[in-house]
Amino acid sequence: MVWKMATFNVNGIRARLPIVLDWLQKEAPDVLCLQEIKCQEKDFPFKAFEAAGYHAAVRGQKSFNGVALLFRDAPEEIRSETGRDVIDREARFLAALMNGVWVVNTYVPQGRSPDDPAFQFKLGFLKELKSWFENHFDPGDRLIWTGDINVAPEPLDVFDPKRLEGEVGFHPEERAVLADVTAWGLEDVFRKIHPEVRQFTFWDYRLPKSFERNLGWRLDHVFATRVLAEAAVDCGVDVEPRGREKPSDHTPVWAVFDLSG
Amino acid sequence: MVWKMATFNVNGIRARLPIVLDWLQKEAPDVLCLQEIKCQEKDFPFKAFEAAGYHAAVRGQKSFNGVALLFRDAPEEIRSETGRDVIDREARFLAALMNGVWVVNTYVPQGRSPDDPAFQFKLGFLKELKSWFENHFDPGDRLIWTGDINVAPEPLDVFDPKRLEGEVGFHPEERAVLADVTAWGLEDVFRKIHPEVRQFTFWDYRLPKSFERNLGWRLDHVFATRVLAEAAVDCGVDVEPRGREKPSDHTPVWAVFDLSG
DNA sequence: GCTTTTCATG
DNA sequence: CATGAAAAGC
Image 1: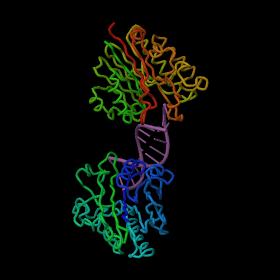
Image 2: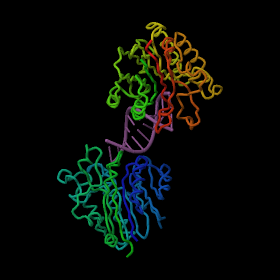
Image 3: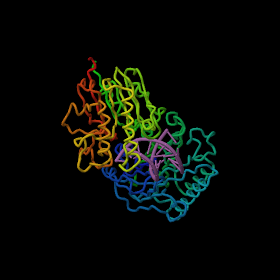
Image 4: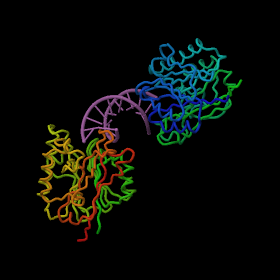
């Protein structure tokens, strides 16, 4: 069975509804992980997605954050909480077991600035996630950790690594903590398939013409346990939605896996 | 010379720009009087109108009110103040002499409720306008008073005169004051041309499906001095803009005059 | 309902 | 440069 997943930080699902619906139609993933839906469950546009053939699970919050999963086939299990302090503090986590794969969708805190308490919140979130993986899963399981991870892992993943070194999103401490999480047993699927490609997933609204000048960051990831990463057939970033009218500042990342084995 | 004027309460010119541009293209009036532009002069979209072949005069105010004139040919004179207390208090008045006709564009205060100070403000505005006409013009001049007058003159001008009797916009006191202004020497051009037609120009957003059910009011008017009213060739309400996506709650009223005589 | 301002967040 | 919220006005 060939299985396609994707992740998209939409920056407000209500504002981005036409773009997301068009993308579902065009790419027809089995699952789409959303971040920054910026609404409560009661305000989530379930109907529009039903009409497009997708069901949804939502972990909402008023105004900020919020994550969701859109899927064609009912998941076997859904988790919107880890029972831990940091991760559960805001609506940033939603996991589901679908087609035998655990899909863990996170909106990792942005971190604000390295000397802000938000930065420690970000590091704490990542550390807690690692311990949650350790306690609930085995690196031999079929598991994907995806979403807006808000960390660019390598110099190749930011538009100007010298200038951006030490900035939030490309700070050595974050990269070390991220490396520690993935060291549990996760591979960066995009990087595995495209070892040398400089491809971003986020372009800041506040930097003038950032998208036109490709001044971006690769912050949205698909990490998979080794068994799954070896089953990855393809992985890519679709830049089209970022070029449309009223785009999100992020654009979708997708991956295809052959789950036959 | 055949001359076409129109009036449109846009409820925010920035939000209504596409609708107004389409309407100018479609109807090509010589003058379009706008009300409730809801912006300061510095935020008025002059450029977009220039590109469409129209120049603008603006009496702006932050957030509320605001009136403007769009015209093809430069006016001979423009007035944005009367020098009076009530009319000049807010951005609700803009007059220009164009093609030998004085076009007086007003956004008459809505009045809020009959026991609110805003209601007296509305009555005072109308009374002051009458005295301004008396002091500056002669009923024999070519003059048009137009805009959102916020009064339905007759039972035929509201969707349910029994139910609405005494409500703001159809209160006997306002109708009396309006009748007193027009008694100076102004005719209701729409009503002169269509003596029996029940045609509204405003449908409240807050009343569910008001437009679809035609639960409206005729609040936007073209009053002309007798000489001019006799030169009126046609007058109508264009309901199309009110039926579009993201409409204003008002729709344009237009009139055509034969100015040859 | 709909548009505006101001505010908080990214 | 975006989003969403809240309040004021009609």
